[in-house]
Length: 94
Image 1 (cartoon, rainbow, N blue to C red):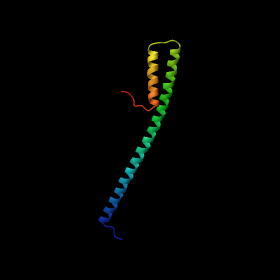
Image 2 (spheres, helix red, strand yellow):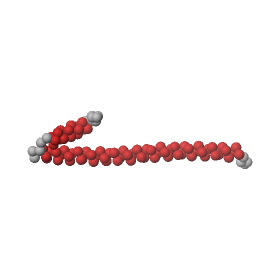
Image 3 (spheres, rainbow, N blue to C red):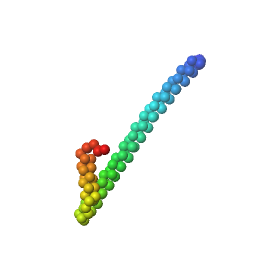
Image 4 (tube, rainbow, N blue to C red):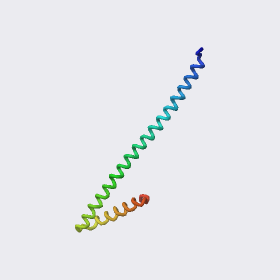
């Protein structure tokens, strides 16, 4: 078998094409994995925020029961409206 410049050129093109395809597949894989990790992080943050909202609601209700007026009732009403909208999938207000 005789290896000339054309054969070497064909092999180089083939290896270059394979490297390009491999790097594209690897980039897509990394993108998908990063998206999965971000989605997991976002879900954990949402869970934490939900717990914080319920804790704040409990504190505001406790203050309202002790007789605090004014901003306590306003904040409690706004928080209850927000939680109700979020529970039913309403779009956020701007």
